Image 1 (cartoon, rainbow, N blue to C red):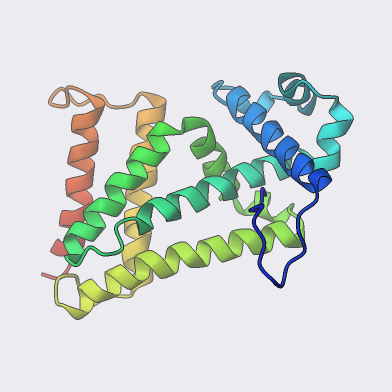
Image 2 (image 1 turned 180 degrees about the vertical axis):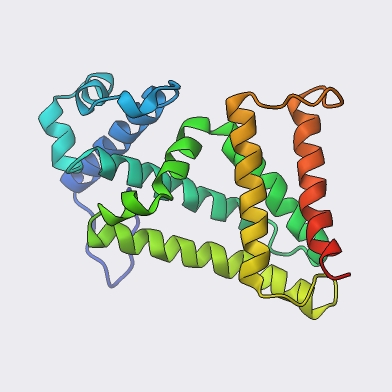
Length: 220
């Protein structure tokens, strides 16, 4: 992933060659994302990505050993941006409002970046992660822990305050994730067929309210 070009007293300055290498890597990922906007994104080849990035196929392999590496880098970059978006609201004190903000931000990020979101869904698969290098596996594990830690801390505060049911945080997160994933899948597949739902925004509002109500209602 692209690193910061600034340095500390304990770090060596990044060379021009390293900066160029990192820039080219980001150009390859950007080319891939643009091609993955296609509904049949999984059929996109490394050769097509290279052509889009206006480089040779061999250059792509200098940065990524295979297409799975490209998927993984897109996914980890997207996950990092979502975490950053969550943390913008760290000063929020009301737990229920914080949960609503997380849900809203998640829908905004996934629907605003469909190619990266679809790749990230794919990268959640166990068989995919088993194929990755130890370094990429470790990066996904770290990001998963950060998501669990961030959202889990908010849910635990809600439990402590008596706002949420006294159940394992992991169970609450499982319900939220399953509902969110199902809603995103329905939107992507065009499966919003309820006559009372006039548009996607209304559907998202209904699902978001249901997710919050489901959490709060479990304590009864």
